[in-house]
Image 1: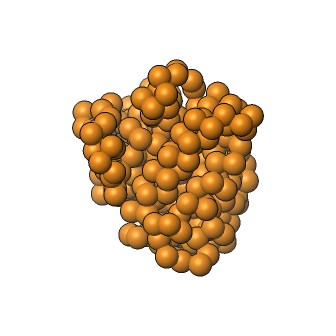
Image 2 (image 1 turned 45 degrees about the vertical axis):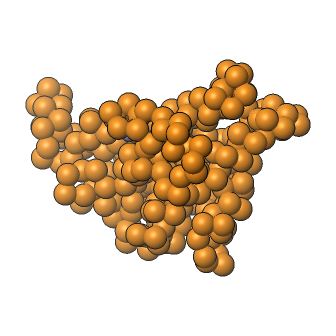
Length: 226
Ligand SMILES: [Zn+2]
């Protein structure tokens, strides 16, 4: 996520600076980590021993919660799957090799964010539409828009295979603006078995119980996470 460079943990510089300035204790984590913690504690993944929370919107980020605790990582970058490379590239994708704001190219975020969906649609059709506009047109029967959504879902599924193969989380909760698009979770869940074996993969993909409020709720849960 674009906020990654603002990640700070207890005792890290940003927390310390904010604590000094505000004269009170401060705890910080990025939006994806807060989202994951909220959905893990009392949301769509409550009771699961392992969960991965996905934020997909203008960027792509993630948060990992194991045994109810947020996994922050040695350098506070655990769960940052948005800047892993998209796997299983087609020849066409290899040629497109979209640039990512992080300075590299071909990142999951460069393929799977909302703006990436728009850019892909424009590459294929010459039409400039936002992600919600593409979803709305597809619902009305626009075949080119539906194909763009299908390509996007397939890429999202491929990207998630890397997470699933390493962590094998019991539950994956999809959050962020893209998760609000009609049929996003269902289309993704149906695409996953093409890249992974596992009979309960579809059941593991869930939408957030707390919707767009989970980020704020998760920030509050940070006070119960150490
Ligand atoms: Zn990147």
